[in-house]
View 1 (cartoon, rainbow, N blue to C red):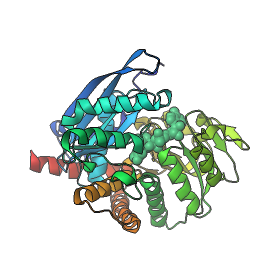
View 2 (cartoon, rainbow, N blue to C red):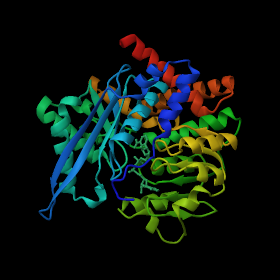
View 3 (cartoon, rainbow, N blue to C red):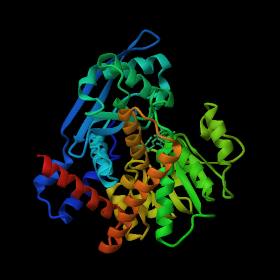
Length: 414
Ligand code: NAD
């Protein structure tokens, strides 16, 4: 498969949405309205490489719905970025913001580049050129990007700076910025911490404890690493982690502190010495209490779903389970805590960052932690209650709540 071949990673979402629309008695037109996007951008980005050669990249931004507030969603820098997946991820954002009740719509974007193969100058130039071409379409009250796979606070800082050159100081145009220029306390770790909060809420709902439970994590980037730290702090045993190359495994539990230190030095976690190595394929099938995919979409397909040996699957990544994989897990009675709930901590704290920017008033970390907990727990308990009442999966329950809220807002505003 070439680097730019579109993947099928996120196609399940529109089928989950279709099922929810049917269950809610919505017409095909309403489904078409909710699954389609308001607007899409595809932008050619020529880049003069450091060696003098010219390379053409493409930047994408899909603005799904904004009935509940400004469009909001991450920017992904990865060779697989394409229009179709960006659409599906943008729709997922609309459902996520609706589910956790933050006053935003949904969007997603990115550039089809591999940031690890670009120099600092090339990355900055590509980012600034993207913003020069889409600045009219984004803005603090219009569309607010954030970090996702392959992007970080430095890239968000360039975005803010480039946008502010045209519109004046505008910290609210982007979230996930460095603290020094208007970023929020707790944003960097928010998605990973949110995953742990939702898992804890689920264990509590089941009258269980997470203490001593085993967990396997695929992906050790922003989400996977902070989730691992939170799991360790809750007394869980992290058996395995990985990056895109391969994973590390220790049946007695990995030393997360030491691995984080190693990663911070700039090294790949897969080259960490002194523990057993494991492939990403095998890692997904390890026996464990919780399996937490925290990397790319589509990794748990029908075959993997049949073979995995986890008690619960927690979607820290966006769309890690395909539609077919999801059906297998339902048949096998393996509960799934769905992405639009499990990884919503990031967009919740992004919302807090935006509020602080609009009010020009920073919040203390304690307030962020308290409000994040409160919002996520309310959403999680609502999902658990609907799932119990309707005897359906957590994903179905989450989609029913979010789809209805989104459709109600679209109906009022259109
Ligand atoms: P990141 O770029 O910081 O980290 C991604 C990690 O996944 C890295 O460890 C990378 O090596 C690994 N990886 C990449 N391809 C892989 C593959 N094929 N197999 C195994 N591992 C692979 O990205 P992130 O911000 O941590 O995002 C991870 C997931 O979480 C994505 O699905 C993203 O959409 C989702 N998400 C992120 C946020 C956020 O706030 N960053 C919020 C919600 C959802």
